[in-house]
Length: 392
Image (cartoon, rainbow, N blue to C red; front, side):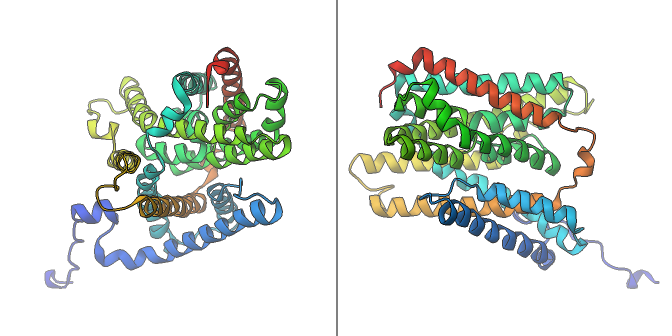
């Protein structure tokens, strides 16, 4: 073959292609097979979530997480059917790019005004539970000699908001897909247990005090959908709608702290890597301590807070949208954030190879169990000491 017959070298990706697509524009068609499979699985998971939670169980809003279903169904399919190579580019695109976009849009759910609704005494209860979960979970993980990043993901999921915190923290600490999937499985199992048991347990330990029950459910159950589901069960069974309101706001306050915990976990992990000499001679990139998708997440939360403040002041959001239109805008963005995360986690499940974790056994589930118990105990103690001071 002559020099003139040689294939031209592959073109380097531009900055836009690298950040948005992960491939050059001419290779976009290669993303479609895997992307379509992830979208179909995500659609089925959303449908199944509503069918189980609304049609079968009779809830107004399903407590069964579509994200949880997507990753579990993906894991099952990935274990039964080896994924063809043609799907890998699209699955990788979903895991890396769609996931980050979903996290950015997730920020629109949060507003700083949710914090003020809980009051000066309610916030320390939430903060105490978050710090307790982060501290004890990472200690237990270290004691069992499990991978640092896996422990960080379980700690984030336990302390903040379950699956959402895990998928948001994963890219910030360079977690592997298998670690994200494992952490989601651990958190989901104990979150579902808490959803079924805690409404009745809380009624006993707080003697039917709906406000304290709401605080407990909002601080001790992992995922937002699980908190709402458990609180709805309590509200219906014990005729105490106040518990549902308090639990929902308490969980929203926990979610707000995700904006602080994700950069903290990124910093914590970067320091660990450096101190352990894993990349000896290399300097930690400071930008990795606050990745671009986290900045986007914070920007969306800031936009939501500013828009809400303008509406509360009697004006229009950014001088453009009245209250009804503004509500429709951020509700649409929240919905799409959820859909994108379901697609991304479906791809995580399909891409995961649990053979790389066969040596871990049940240790991560012990960490999850211990973390769930600890956050419940810390929540009980904090509410017992300060819950009577909280007004709502």
